[in-house]
Picture 1 (cartoon, rainbow, N blue to C red):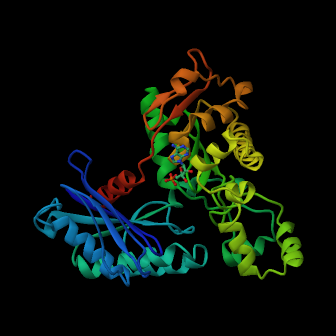
Picture 2 (tube, rainbow, N blue to C red):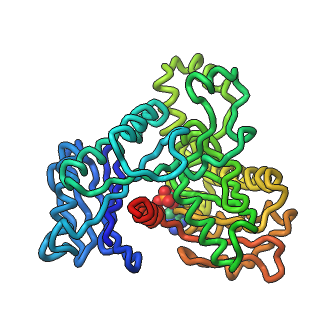
Length: 395
Ligand code: AMP
């Protein structure tokens, strides 16, 4: 069974074709700058292939993906009939979706309703679904939601201390994101430790461009750092994460900003980019800090400290922790970031081994022998979770 995994952003499209008999990635790629001049497809299949082609809309982009998969040279299938189903990443499922589902007109209407809560993400996700329905007629389409895994959170974790009517009328509550990643790495963590997930208290730190932490007790999320939207929680590449809500009005008054402009500041000009003034990319910031740039060093210090505070909070939420897991771009690649964060956690009984920590992108427990808490590096694989859920939905 071959499953096409689609992740449609507003101007980009990531895809993978996965053979579920052995979960092998047959092909993967990226269409960039959809709707903008200079659009490009980068494809890795039988061969690597990259070309600039006009993609005024997602229709042309998905058409090019299908052509790339079928191509005699760099393609990997002979007929589109070899694709059994399409699994779509959908960012916001609100309270409606606690699991992945086969997409129907009702599901699309519900995803549309949630677009209010994820205006940058849900509309392009829906476009991807519509285009695939058109270009791959008759193939089952499955929706896999970033929010679904977090739906097990108890009320005390998801309610904000706001007038209750905002929850009743507008569903203002904590939802959480990166659910597929938190699910994948927590499952892998249990397998890696040779234990049942039902018996474990795990804190997963997804540290990429976007970043979030989840507290997972017995395989179920009990709390997570992102909220109504992916702006809350950790410091991110360009997003502020937690801050005093009164700052918005204060800065808007001083700088004469509209709500839209302020929102843009919090989403695009804040985070480690905002503090450092260097970049949103941790490689650049680590480099600048090493050369003595004080703001770059401050950005990293604020970042590490915030992650450590969440781990402490979630150890309290679960009354203990067996494993802290690091994943995504920074979590998988930066030994320095893992070491700095773990330096706050010795009180939990988490002691790391610098030599074991000095790796990237491989599964490892880098805690010292005898450490009470495991420190795990687990590379994430969100596409595989989408493909597995798609397969399960077809059963
Ligand atoms: P992701 O969103 O998971 O693709 O993560 C992307 C982020 O990971 C980039 O913006 C970088 O900040 C970070 N990253 C990737 N590779 C490294 C590395 N070798 N060292 C430090 N940070 C890295």
